[in-house]
Length: 102
Image (cartoon, rainbow, N blue to C red):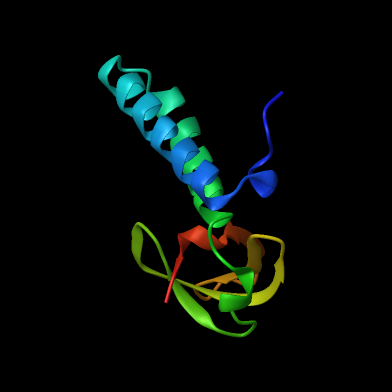
């Protein structure tokens, strides 16, 4: 039975991320684009569990990884997800903390 990311140590998470990168690379070479997107999302989630949510502050604004012109303002944190507002939107959205850049 597989462990949840929340149950893994940092070393196990690094190993899992390396495996996922390898699988994503193979899927990309085979042209299985849907699989690439799924694996990249899993990488983002595993990376979120390597970060400390306490390092992210309510009310602070962060850039969004891979979206250079977008910002995200945290309303609250729940686990390894930041809930808040993207740009000028008034729609509450969630992002894994690994996608937020100071």
